[in-house]
Amino acid sequence: MEAASCCLPHSAAEVSIPTTIVSLEASSSASPLLSTKQVQIALDESEQQLFATLVATVATFENGEIQVPNRPHSRLEVRVAGGWVRDKLLGLQTHDVDVAVDSLTGVEFAKLVQAYLKKYSQEDLAGKMGVISANPAQSKHLETATMKVCGVEVDFCNLRAQEIYQEHSRIPIVRFGIPLEDAQRRDFTVNALFYNLRSKCVEDWTRSGLNDLIAGKLVTPLEPVQTFRDDPLRVLRAIRFAVRYNFALDPALEAACMNQEIHTALHIKVSRERVGKELGGMLTGKGARPTIALDTIARLKLAGSVFCIPKVGEDNVSAVVGHVLGQAYGEQHHDSPQARHVREMGWEESRILLQLLPTVLEAHNKVAVQGASLMDLRLLPLAILLLPFRTLYYQDVKKTGKQFPVVQYVFREGIKFKNKDVQASTALQESVNQMAGFLTEIAVDEKQKDTPPVCRLDAGLLLRATKELWVTCLILATVLKVRQQQQGQDGVVERKIDWIQLCQSVYRTILDLGLDGCWKMKPLMDGKAVIQALNLPRGPEVGTYLDEQVRWMLMHPHGSREDCESHLLSIKRSLEGQSEEQNADNLGMSDGTGKTPSSPVNSSRKNPRHFSKKMHVESMDLA
Image 1 (tube, rainbow, N blue to C red):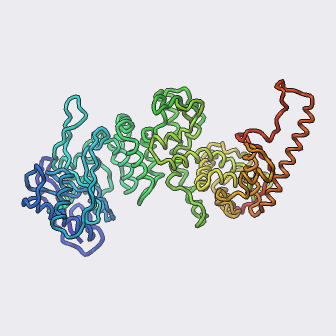
Image 2 (cartoon, rainbow, N blue to C red):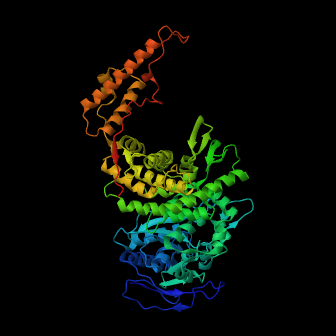
């Protein structure tokens, strides 16, 4: 156990090591101690070894044993900064160590550590060093060295001061900062605490970091708009920290989050990759509560800047058409009052849908079966958020005549998620109406009101369309139906439907029917075998029979190849008989081309003929 003292500067002008120290004796207790007068930090073995190595490195530099080119040896203070200190004070496990030095750059000090270990250590305790360059245009202000030391991932940088910009230049002149300047330039007071390795003292240069940590408040060291202007991504970091740690957002900070200047800066100044990475941190990991995080984004009017509905003239977008909640969006200028109003309506509807999700999830978790397909808890809240925009499409100047879902653009260009996520999210939005219609058909069935039937064929085709996402799509459709019922638009007028209970019943019945995983079933016959068995020419007609084979296999899960082949042959004979009748009816008629009318079975596969009309129906247990 390593004990730490609490150091509080007397005033903003005080820049030397603070003199007000509250001593704390070492404790054998593993529980954290945090109060306005006392703090305690517990170091594990690897952290103790790391810090001892850094302190020894400082000593060899100060006495001249190891030198840095073009740097005279002098006093050097090394501090651990930010999240590591915050989490340690809260008694949380953390493995991200950010080291800040005051008279060397992070790269210089990292090389110094490497030199020390090479000269004095018999073990290979330092890994290869990587360098992350500064990029002020993207709000990345400091060059950072990253390296594994004593088994711990460490980032090294120097204390940060206010950048000085020369006229007509976007590249700042960077000088070494003092602790107070660095603390004030950080995002939040709870992240502006330092742990001084020499004094083993927690330093609170903002004089409010410890109090805010104890109170569970998120406050910026400087005026919030100034802090966010420095790096607009901090508005998303504020939401992530507030949700993950259950911190309250300071009212002034909330107001700054809703500032239009900051929204514009977030959209223009911060790379979409950084936005996507920050958003990803809200969706997964310890303490993540994605539904609350996304609701907060929408509440603070940040959704448009984060998810970026496509704009004509950007990224080859030539048009945005469709509607949101019944309001036409096409032919509206992106920044026109009408277009902004339609988008705001959509984001407000998103909040309502997000608030319905926890109840549906709780009910589903009660009936979820271990080993069955799982819902995607990362993509589901995003799908709920974007549900009002599922009927919005954009056109690309390079792909004339085609329209693409706006959701696809949002995931690919707005938040830069992986292609797998782009495809999955697009599939969810394209399938949710079909899944909702499936639920509606079951609900309005008049034959068995108490035990509404599930069509095995329809359910199987839906699962084959959504694959591993079918449970996610079912939950998404249930939220949609609950919302439509609130609006009197769920399509059922005879009686009120408990859509959540119906969702549970459909889920159980699909599992009972053995349909989970039906998208993995191997066809009894491939295309070549179908051609041989039915004596077919090559062409789209083969694909039509392959589709029919899938339907037959869904309705006859234990059927044999011979039975399937017999079924397809009977379909072929039936169609040939229909074709002969049609030719007889058209005998002596001409369409003016000299050709006889084509057989219906030769239609394009884009509009395949659904041969089978049989439906294998199972009843659901609603008890």
